[in-house]
Length: 282
Image (cartoon, rainbow, N blue to C red; front, side):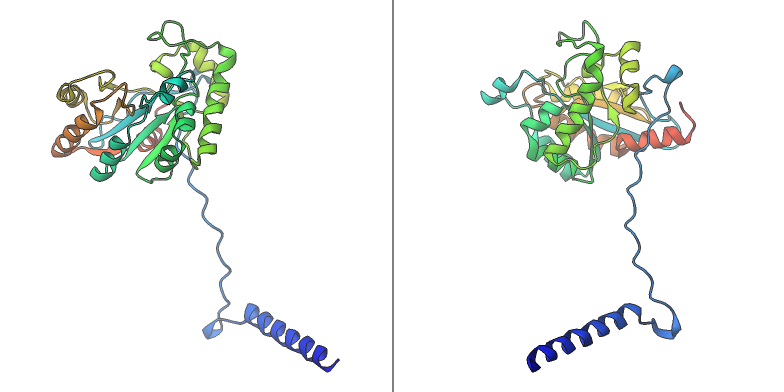
């Protein structure tokens, strides 16, 4: 009985002490500041919808206000290429990502949901690296229009699902903050496609410089094509797929130092869109 009473007294005294700590005043009579709530992440910039609420399309940033350029890489894999991956074909390019990291080059990776499912560890690593941002390239990499480089075509009723399904695949892979940017497979779109995606809230991102690395075998030619095309605010489209773009990593090792020598600063697509939106572009 006495031991029980002592335990009760001990608990009461300890509780009183903790309560006193919680209400103690700070030195000089000031109150202890309440812990601040964690800051909410900034909302990614997007462009305003186009006429009749159509999905807006972004091609390049402002040509004035500094030499900035965004390198973008499409991580392509169609929904039916699983057997090819199982057979040893590489739709990833970890050496390219490693080179971007070693050169400290920010970049935007437009990823298909199927690619994220095939390479979840790589998808998560890219998505959680502050040097990069992940954007949406559809789930299946099927075309949103007819006659698009031989890609299988989907109907308008599936287009929104393709975007949403890709974001779901990113989340399952551990990508925390995929951006509300969408690149049409093959870059092919029309009014019907823009209308079908309007409810998703994405900004469609195209490009003004074609890297020409798809199926290329000459890295120097790819580098020359990029260097000849870049202007302030440019968006460059390249690929993050070893089997379809085997020269990209070597081309990057030539492109990056030369553009830096010319005074260019590498940025993510989100920075170009933020600048464009602040300039009042639709």
